[in-house]
Length: 483
Ligand SMILES: [Fe+2]
Image 1 (cartoon, rainbow, N blue to C red):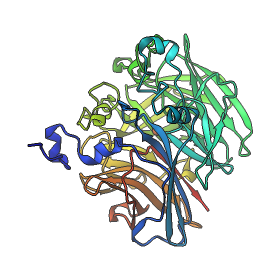
Image 2: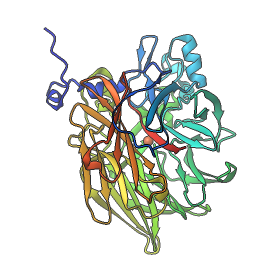
Image 3: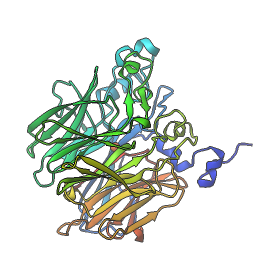
Image 4: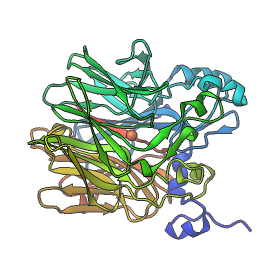
């Protein structure tokens, strides 16, 4: 007799993945247009839309993606108006998506999968195409969907219909624009970064004015050829953390390995932290202990120091080796994810040329978020996902209050995975007053819901839950756009 599928932490021992994890890697149909059920009350002054992006389609023609972080971009919009809610989602119709939809088969390499056809078909890298499935940012009436491979795609913020390629900062496609960007709330500037690989790696820093005009493009030689996902910006500086996740372009270009399979973690090399002026110029370098970084929380200047807060891992065991959770969960199995993402701080003293790393919270965290109005300035509050077990995916939400050192936690329990808490400001209220909107997946009901928290009272639990009549796969990042 077949064993029942375990739903809970106790199921961990069986090596079957809990249902709330397994469902993160199950494809969504797209094209939803729904009025969801609401449990609780939606505040009437919450007016606007949460946009989110993440992989939504993992198989075609009988072939399944091997890694949880690899699928075609599914953009979502959850709109709030006068206490009512509306939900919509759509796939970003990239050139890859359209060609593969017509062929009913995967045709192109993505970052965890080589192109079908073996080594010969993948010589030169196998034409990796954008899936536009990592982040989404509203900017000047267009929604920009980013991958880690150019180009970004423009999406209509109302209908979610794909407008087309929006080659921000890379008109010549000479480098890859990465998915994480920063808005300067004081100038309205939009800061992006990219990389180019070759005999050596170069970092590209791109600054757009509030009107969208390109103001600067700095090209910074990198002493390391690595994988990098996010960066930091203060009012004065850009900070790139070159963690020792080395990328071998030769393995990739020879057709032997996917992008992820071309990465190797070498903690003995430590981190190198590159600090450069937003005006460009010669960078300064600082050594730091090895820490794998997906996401920056925020950075700011404090006298001669730069404070840079982030979630760091001693080793990215959840992500890269083939026994990692993010591989195994695609087969419905538990994989390795023992190392927690701890909340960390770099204190970088530019005058003394020193860097100190502090572990601020040794629990399990991801998806750090601040009130965007605090970006590049001293932040008082951080919001993160948090969990009691290290799954590489968390089950709760944490609020960290820096001045008091107090934390608030709400945990949904072992049947629910919780995604990035997106901050929505309360109109007319001060900094850090507003709501958090958290996309969750319930393994018992096999349905997704959005939890709405009062951002100042996370430990009181959600003030409302917006229930969808279906599941949703993993969603990485979102952004709030007030009406
Ligand atoms: Fe990310």
